[in-house]
Image (cartoon, rainbow, N blue to C red; front, side, top):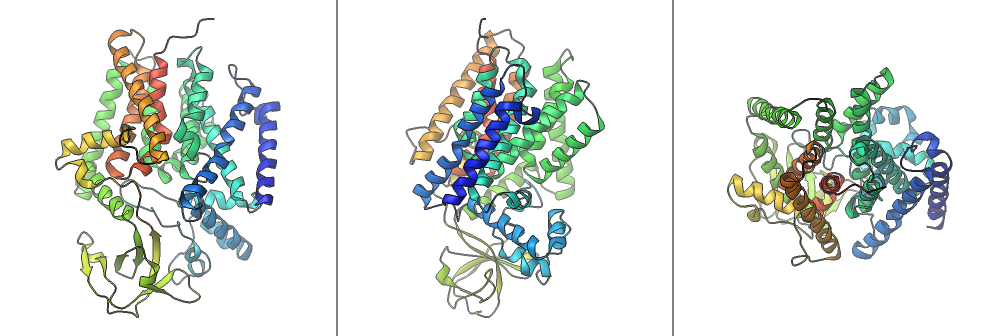
Length: 496
């Protein structure tokens, strides 16, 4: 532990000094925010790293079996494999690996990971853990085997994204620049979750850099390098969390393009509406389902996972058992392969009719071996699917309610939910400020409408597909802050 902290503190001092003296080689140069202010903000943001670790250690006994710890474990596995076969490691980095169950890479590397496929959805609401594992396996070369250094790198990447997002929108917040940065840096959930090895840090990094590159290109800073960097960021957006990053990218692109258009608000929302209708039409033609129905399918799948269990995969079968390791036998010398004990009940799905849930009341097959997909305890903050209502209207209302206003003090059941209640209060106040300002304030509403569109669109998707308040609290963090920015936009400018 001491060596890990020494490595963390060394990097913390180095990064802070570079920001203070040269804006980290000019990365944080700005005409409104000094290098000293940027350095102080970064140091305060870094406090999220120990806070996250210590809080999760107190509440859950540590991070080893949670996403942050599992991502660290898997990055370590890939990095160790690079010392065994660097060529095959490079193939993994670029997605060229052969990971068939009988392949060398699978047996020597992939089988030892825990999150490589967990959350890997190839259809709707694509969510790929592999990009995080790949990036941190590279960073592991200079991380001195320290989780805290990885968390610091995540925190720094999010700080870069926040600073570039600020530079993208600061012209709409004259006299309130520092206030905007303070909100982006220290909005509780965003501050907290970007202090860990999680996707949220990369999401914020890609979101901020994409917005800034779009602004530069639209307003005349086009170059081949800028174009290639934007193309790479959009590629990462598709891999990481497209329902967050692609919606944000399209919204910011239209926002910058329409700055000089007379009826920009009408044009913006007309294009977005036509885009949604076209996307839904295409999905119905190709997949024979609507986007809304696909979201509800994802909701049911998430609810199943949130109920916890041990999830195993055979050649044509997917199995869920209760979260109890005594129900299975581990195959020696192969930590991710199990057989099921006799008379154990389980539910399962078969590939040729995977929409049908089947039940085995007493297992008799103790020979067949299954690969472990993942195992997880039951979530402590699940939302019953019945609470979403039976028709599409009530499901829509519930999605907004659970993603924006739940919990709210009176129904908070833990420290984390109490913190979420304060966030939800800030969201509610900001929405009220925007609503009143739309009616009474003559200020151009386009920036505030942009922020609200991004936040509400993404929060609706998250609220509809994620029936767990803890997960919603984390997933919404990169975008719900836009609601506060919309409210700040209408605050009076500071007089000089």
